Image (tube, rainbow, N blue to C red):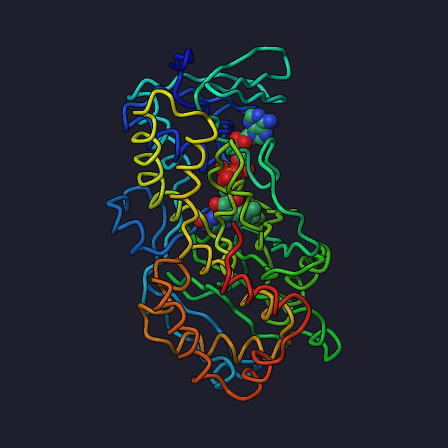
Length: 426
Ligand SMILES: Cc1cc2nc3c(=O)[nH]c(=O)nc-3n(C[C@H](O)[C@H](O)[C@H](O)COP(=O)(O)OP(=O)(O)OC[C@H]3O[C@@H](n4cnc5c(N)ncnc54)[C@H](O)[C@@H]3O)c2cc1C
């Protein structure tokens, strides 16, 4: 029998930690949260999600903005606004931004309603026994539980990851503000604007970037120059310069700067953690970020309940060790099918990182010619493995030869990543 009075300690208070703590508390488990930051501190990022994802979860009330007019631009761009190179691709799907305070409090309220205990402090040491684990904080406090869940983000405090030589990192530089002329149509959301006629010919040969932009209402717009994922990452100075030249080319000036988002780094191809370790992870620490989109909140909301249920069931065995409890969680979090899908996504990202700008534009044109549920399922990681493979084959068929050649030639780690698809790592 275990002597621990707590079932699980969750480390962190970002979206990953709160999602799993709330779901486990709902399973009547005794949960404690240890976090280095104030759980009510506003999160630094803006979280986007497709409308249907929150609708399916019954959580559309957590959105602050929702757009129906959702488009991308995959032409090369032209001074003439009526040129086919400026033609938008209509996505025909709603996109939303969370009200991040509401999202945070949605999870905090569940935690409070189900009796979660909160602790402030940084976890610095972990000792795992046969019956329980002990976390020690920087100021010497000891917390004991049957299971520890490390949800401390992309550089987790205790979880071990396999070494990755080239980590693909998404970087962005963004501004929120008012402009002399609207930078996007009224009520419009632009997922990716790859037009590049503002760049010199030599700049067009450098790593491509795109604009993510939206009308925030009240005359304000959010514009973010983004690099999809690169190893090494594109510098923030380059992104800022690209955004400035994009704006200047279109005669746009910021008349009032309301907010500047600088220095955001998002690792995209985090390897799946070692699934034999006696500590469980959730969120960024557990490699849950989508390697193609960099999104994760939808997955946290969809998957926390299933993981919590499996752990709660395993905890019914009062003799189950921390290692056995973590194993049950890892098995649910990273089943073989999901690991195989992850290998395919990582293979795809590796390909995209090598594409030139014209290839990328053609690639995305073909991608968004897939059936609407296919590309949506691809971007939200909700397709079955069979349907994901079908989407990739369909996309290959639709793509022009410039893209097909790029997809077929194997370079660098690509063969290894394909091998992971056949035999996914444990
Ligand atoms: C720039 C950017 C934009 C993104 N945009 C989107 C988006 O639009 N949509 C989407 O779905 N996803 C998006 N993501 C991805 C993802 O949803 C976020 O990165 C998310 O914040 C990750 O959540 P997390 O809880 O795993 O980690 P974090 O948010 O990093 O939280 C980590 C927590 O651990 C705590 N902590 C750290 N060390 C310790 C310690 N030793 N002891 C105790 N506590 C500790 C920290 O205080 C913090 O509370 C974005 C990510 C980035 C970087």
